[in-house]
Structures are given as structure tokens and as C-alpha cells.
Amino acid sequence: MPGEAAKERTLVLVKPDGVRRGLMGEVLSRYERRGLKVVAAKLMQIPKDLAEKHYEEHKAKPFFPELVKFITSAPVLALAVEGRNAVAVVRAMNGATKPWESAPGTIRGDLALALTPNVVHASDSVPTAQRELPLYFSEKEYVSYHRVDEDYF
Image (cartoon, rainbow, N blue to C red; front, side):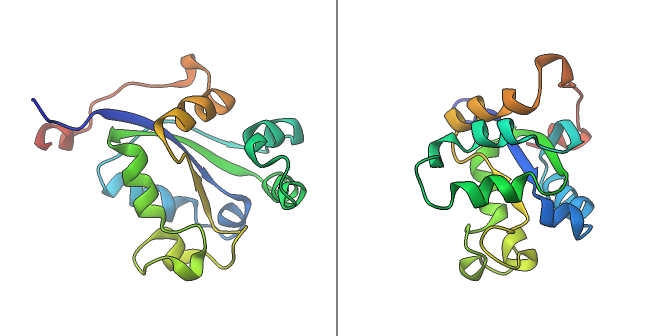
């Protein structure tokens, strides 16, 4: 239909604090209840070289070593999430990066405890998602299926 929002795919990481606190199911269910479709998922330990590549835009910043240390400290749940305006929808659902600025009802507003351990990472734009997704998933890892509620929007 004309004017209809484009279907997008974005990366979400349930960060080490979210995994270690047993929040994977809570986070995943929020995205699914919103009508987003998980098209790839894996529980993984991020190696240092991947963490450095993922966060390369922050390499010159003083917090870079701590960021890499944190994201490699325990497993993460990597998700490829798909839906209309998925990037913006996921970012809105996650809330502000600083948990104390996140609205109640957002993932970070409800669940995050501090700035770095803030439960989730999500791509901040379509180009970022296009750069980040192949770091975690190969094309053969994506699945295609039809959600029954896709008929309503």
C-alpha cells in the first residue's frame, strides 16, 4: 500500500547483564508482543576481536576498553528482529541509553541498572543495522515465516 512503512531488519543484543540476570525471555517477549518477528537468534560469547569490530566507531573514546571488556564478559543473546520500522520501534522500546533517562515501560526504564550494563543494544539506524547484522549472522542463518498477526498490519 502507498505510504506504508518499509519492513526493516535490525540487530538486538541482550547484553551480558541481561543474560546473567535471566532477562532474555522478558526482553524477547516484549519484541514479539509488539509484533516484531525474530528471524535469527543465537546465544554466544562475543570474542574480543568481534567486540572491537562491533564498537569500532568508539575506538578513540576513553570508554572503549571498558565497553569491549563488558560485552565479552559473559554470553549475549544476539537477535535479528524484523518488522515495519523495526529500527525505530526497537529503539523506542529499549528507551534512552542512560537508564535514568528512560521512560517507565521501556526495557531500560524497567530493567536497566546502570549505563554500560543497560540490558540491551540495538542498531541505531538502518545503515548501522546493515553493518552490524553480518557481524553476528550469515545469510543462511535467517529463517522466513509468516506470523499470523502480520495479516492485520
